Image 1 (cartoon, rainbow, N blue to C red):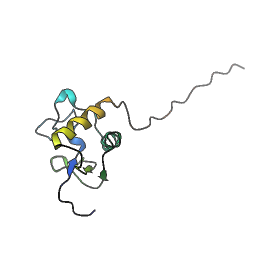
Image 2 (image 1 turned 180 degrees about the vertical axis):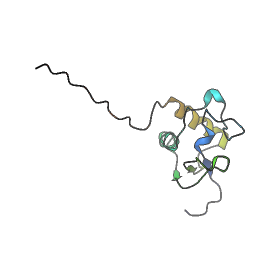
Image 3 (image 1 turned 60 degrees about the horizontal axis):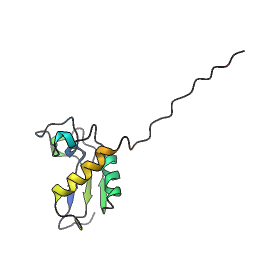
Length: 112
């Protein structure tokens, strides 16, 4: 990655409802997301049509043992980081699941 002068960094911990403010959550609890993942943030960034880059090998300093990465966002067209966090939180909250759920196997009841 090239060195940039200014960019915004978002970690999943900013939006995680199970974390306290002291542990790194930034958004209010009523706007936070249950089990926020990097994929939910990426989906929200795609929905908002932002220029972003994903770094899966980076860790959040307050949660370095369980962090899954971060999203770096180009700030063009965004007023400030607070506005960006609000918009991403609103979209992430509305997502039920980004990940695919496995199909349940149907039991066949055949009579002989």
